[in-house]
Length: 62
Length: 286
Image (cartoon, rainbow over all chains, first blue to last red):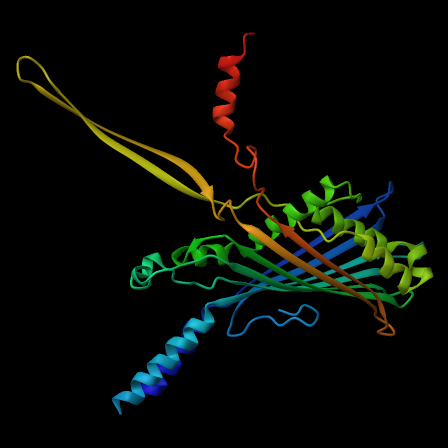
């Protein structure tokens, strides 16, 4: 029972470490007649994760 | 039995401690639709992904410090960052993938462990500040680039991605053009932490007749101080690798190393701007 309580505590704390934000934007360019000639859609997700290990590099040796 | 529980608690604490290493991740997708004459169609697609971690190891310089947690501190910290950018021309099937690895190591940069979480919270700003320092130095040496600002560079890459000429000449031309662009980020100045100062004092006035007048004053003002130690020195390594999206062939690699050191020796390594200004005004006969 105590083990279960400890595991639940750890999971709860670590789950609370993750946050995410989403952004979306659309910009449109029109010509003189009002016709759309260019449309740029941008979507981004920013997230903060808790991690137990360091980011590993492929090219940089530390 | 008690020993087992102690071990379990210790294990749980270590695990939670491990969770304090946070990874900042960002995924961004941009799609551009242009009208070549027969209606809007997808002409360029840009996908970027980044992951960043900041590590603030602590070290104890004396036994006294070790036994007082508020004095726990570190002198070096580092930032690890990985990025990948994929540029595609869906109409021609052409595309380039750029993989970046960036390592920033700060030395001679003392900080209190109690402030490490604040530094980690603002690690993206700290990272951008270090890269801005580098790019300012590169610009001072005379290196030419169309822009040194991340946002403007992003627009430039998008515009390049849209160019018909680039699309028709293949991935290697595109890769070379990308490699010639300097690595930039959105410009950032030295990160500052804001604080407030409240000054409270009491004025007691006693007249000859013995009447006491007590007045309380309280004034609050704001100030700021650098989040990083101004003596900090940085070593930065940036590796960028370009590959064709179609064939997977390596198109080129850029491997840059930078050192930012405090200027040593001479009278000009420390400035006293206010004092200099005062002296100049007093000594100026005009």
